[in-house]
Every structure is written in C-alpha cells, then in structure tokens.
Length: 193
Image (cartoon, rainbow, N blue to C red; front, side, top):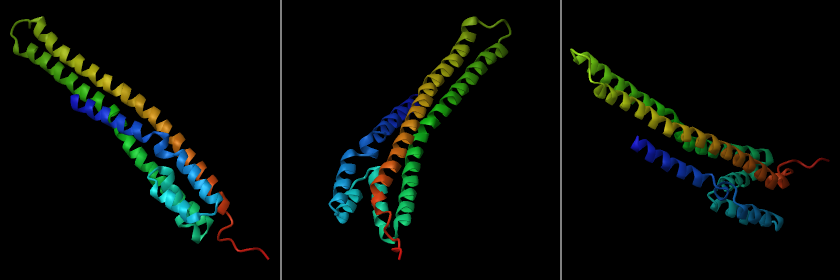
C-alpha cells in the first residue's frame, strides 16, 4: 500500500502539472501566433509554434507545415496531431484509474489473508480458540480493506476531475487552432473563373 500511495501521489502531481492551461493552451502562444499572422510573418508564426512544446504549439505547427498542400490537408494534420497529443494525456491519466482499480483488489487480498488466518486458528485448535487470536486475523482483514478503499476513492475522484479538465482543454485547443488557421481557408483552392 505504501508503494501504491507513493505512485498515486506522483501520478497526481504529474497530471496536475500537465493539466495547467499554460501547458496545453498558452495565452502567450495564441497572442504571438495571431500577431505574426496579422503581420503576414508566416515563417515566424511557424517557428513560434514549432518551438513551443505545448499541445496547441504541436497542433499549430503541424497545420502550418501541411498548409502548402492545402487547407483541408492542414486541418487533417492538425487533427492527427491533436488525437496523438490527446492519447498521450489520456494514457498518462489512465494510471490514476489503474490505482483506483488495483487498490481495492489489494485490500481484498489482505481481507482474504486475514480471514484465512482466523480460520486457520480455529482449525488448529482442539478447544475453542482465543478471541484475541481470531481478532488479529479479522483486524488484518478489515484494515487492508479500509486502506484499499482510502486509496481507491480519491484516485477515482481525481481521475474523473482531471479527465474532465483534459477534455475541456483539448476541445479548447481544437477551437483555438481552427480559429487561428481559418484565415487560410482559401489556400490550395483554384480561383473560380
């Protein structure tokens, strides 16, 4: 349980840091990127997005890199990178759900072990076993169950909260990226005569 607790705390800290807006949709990137686009400095906008390690930076740089092939291809590239980045976030977050699932199982293992100890005490004794000896096994059973639940309940709650936050931020990335790239809708289209 101690190992699971340390892993859980490390996972929560890691995911909380990843769930910060600055890591997914940095305002400075949005403003700088938009300013470069307004000034028609497309190479600088690409370099700004490429140098930013955020989710939005990865999506925007993928879109600009494919823009020469046309707007639909740029949007497709942005969606592919968005899906890949979303998968990375969800993969990291899924370990918290794993802690929430495993903890009660470890607690149940301790419960079974404690009950086996109690029944072994009864089986070994020719006379009525001492209540204190039976209580040791039952105590082990209940404590392990309790500790397993103490770990599982917060893990499941944190998983749900962070999953919702990641989904909200991922949606925001999509909206912001498409809004910034919408000025290129006519790229790659043939002029109508």
